[in-house]
Length: 226
Image (cartoon, rainbow, N blue to C red):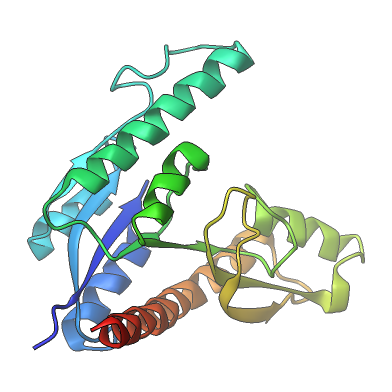
């Protein structure tokens, strides 16, 4: 019998997308897979409570608390050097595990990885995917929903539509190859909070569908290599 696809989830906050993944692995919508671990970079992330309830081990690994960057550091060169060391250390940690993952899912992970993390992970054949609340090539980075909302209010949003996507992670922020995309129409009379709530309601379904799709591709690649 083939080994299940090993999934590492990274999250920074509430972990509702993480919970969606837990539920989908449990009920078989993400087949032949196992969430082996959660990594958080914020000490009070509620995602850790979800992990405890599901019996999933978790680790806290933070840029400042773990000594990579001084609190309040303002020097751009030192900040970049700190981030490079943090990225390299986290990649080394992931690759040192006996049950190293086949797939990393960034589910509300509020930190941008650079090549010091991405390159060694890619070299080990581990895929990384991320959910971003915008359409491909639109509103990269933070504040995507608010920026789309502001453009809609100003009459500048293309086709009055924004959306969400799950994509592969590369060094260019939110520019990796899309896996699944869903368009979402902005509505007259809707405020920013209402739009955010509506977008978030679609995220759980999309991250589950995209993860299942990638898991199947990984399983097929493993079978082909045997």
